[in-house]
Image (tube, rainbow, N blue to C red; front, side, top):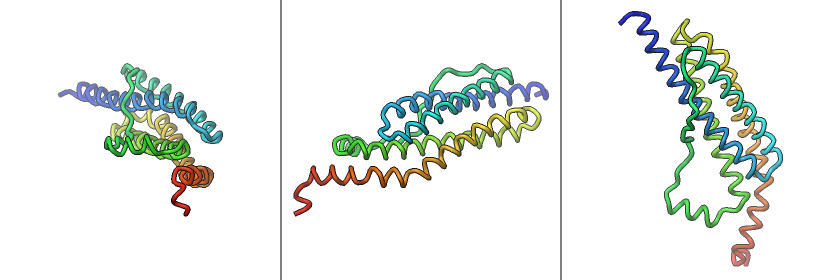
Length: 184
């Protein structure tokens, strides 16, 4: 295989990898919009809104990178790496969890998604570096996306304890109302 053919094949594979991450970002922006609507805590909504703006910028950067190396950006949405609970556990959660507990559960899921995105960007950067001159011009933009994802991960990790502290009294109060015999 000639060097040009080999470079074309590697470029096609890299475009595929970029589009896979773009599909995750496409799905992620949809999820962020839903999270903004459902969140009960103002500071969470504000942070999610900021991250939605960053994610929209991630999409634009990925689209520009893909076009720049001769590819066509996808409009598809990927499945997100969220837990799928066994039916019996899901039913129990759905029937027993309070809004405050769901807020905490969604924050856990946010952290899962953000970590997955960070891993994807880290791998893309490593592959771009391995590609040498072929993809060296993509590293800066991919690194910016990774930085935003890491910032969101850090924000969630730093704010989860406070969220729990703020929501826990309501959770306990609801549990007390549901189980009055527990206090006899």
